[in-house]
Length: 247
Image 1: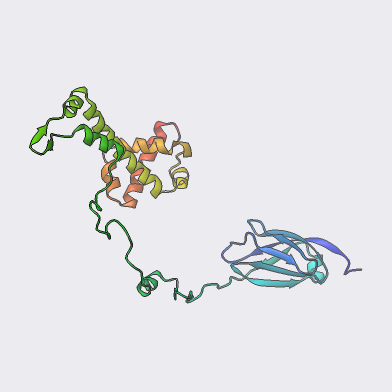
Image 2: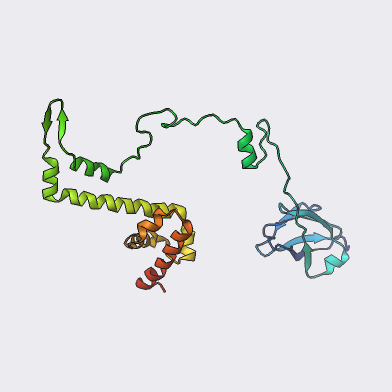
């Protein structure tokens, strides 16, 4: 009759590194299973002499037979031992890759990357113009020569008089700054803006526009120094939050 008695056993798995969430608890006798929560707690129905198996990718498989003492206890603590799954070297066939980038790059026979530069195409190194830059160039084009004849276009003169050239120059400057803002947006995850700088997700673009106004913005971004950029926007975030009542 004692063997027929079953109960819900509660317990907790633990380890030195503390990462015990989602550890599988399997009663191989009844084929029932459970999984630990983020803190390692679990509950599973057991009977006397049932076998419990605890397994997780990062830990060695542990097996426990439910004896009378465990069955009568109110709580079971299960220590887990970390499993060393790191390998000294793995060879991936047929390319003999080891996973070490430096060694693999030296061993691989990689052909020349096909690009405009490798093909020797004209203007391969020319940076494509933004739309605003193309419009400004068109509005500022000088005299056009065709053979022996030279024509003086009136567009640059008209654009200068009407203020269109000045407007386009401002648009180019604005687009350059916008591109730099987007560069920052790709360099730092949104979670950093929200959690570290305490900038709401929907306010990130507005915050970066606020950073653009600073006279030092271009120089900091052009430095390509991520630490300097982060320190800059970190300092700006304090003022931005204060000005917008986010403190």
